[in-house]
Image (cartoon, rainbow, N blue to C red):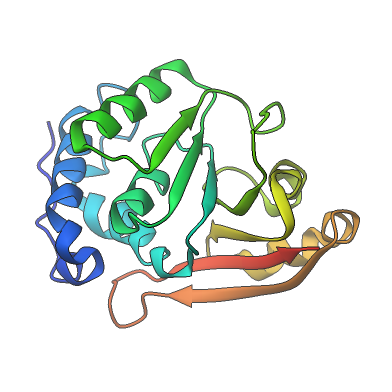
Amino acid sequence: MTELEPEPDAAASLFGERIELARRFTAALAQHGEERGLIGPLEPPRLWTRHVLNCAVVAPLLRPGLVGDIGSGAGLPGLVLAIARPDVHLVLIEPMERRVAWLEEQIQALGLDNVAVVRSRAEDVRLEHPLDQVTARAVSALRKLIPLAAPLLRPGGELVLMKGAGAQAEIEAAAKQLSKYRVRNVEVLVLGEGVLSEVTRVIRATVK
């Protein structure tokens, strides 16, 4: 097992009293993530900064309510957000059985009562209630993500999508889908400046 990156100073302030849960999740991911096909062999030495804290800075954007995470995978950002925001209920949407098993194991191990896992592809999922917000990280280009995410939201619901440095270009490339699905007030937020070594970019928008 590659050694886990030392915990950065920012972790305790981002997670507050929930930091111990974040430590346990990060340690478990470092220990089992590669063998279970959740993370690559190069990730443990940068697991905190590049992955866990990269997701944690998004937590203040969530509203109390029902938030879906499309393609949760290892739990980035879904489990991290559930740890950071116990007042928000997360629905983790993940089609792969081995990843669903991991997510459910972690929910149980960490005693999280604000998370449910739905095994499904986003385009096939049927939820009992429409979502207040939808997030996703490293799933697909915005033009492909909008048709998956927008139909899951209630009217006035919000997209909170984690993206890379090309976020603005993705918005321009998705003009057709933004119009078709009535996505409005599209903006790129840069999070974690002065806190993280690499900033997090989020495309935030409202679906009318």
